[in-house]
Image 1 (tube, rainbow, N blue to C red):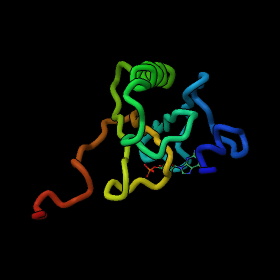
Image 2: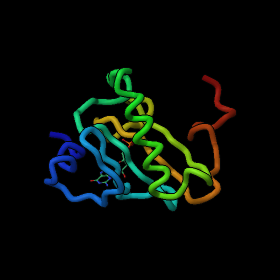
Image 3: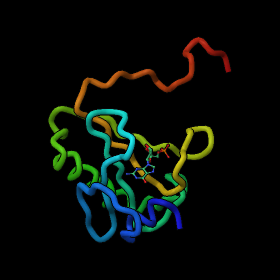
Length: 117
Ligand code: 5GP
């Protein structure tokens, strides 16, 4: 059982924002913006690459509701998911980060843009 499965089951507490039968949104324990929400499917999928496209519509609607619930739907937000080793994904349960509440800087990633690869 991964750490987010334990949040879904209630074994580990989380500061929940919104929940339905299939999805859960809760505050990130180590926020990187004034608003930093994690949005997950309750069922375990390792990351975006293995998530069925047929469920993305419902996930999209849920994420939009979360944005309204935390008051960033009008002011804007960033939505991202880390997928796999090169992305730095730490928790192997699909999650979208919803970041907002400030004017977010965009670096395009943490790599030096001058770097050649
Ligand atoms: P990743 O790097 O996998 O995209 O992001 C994992 C995120 O999960 C990190 O931002 C981290 O702070 C958050 N996180 C890890 N463990 C917990 C936890 O037990 N509770 C909550 N609320 N967030 C967690």
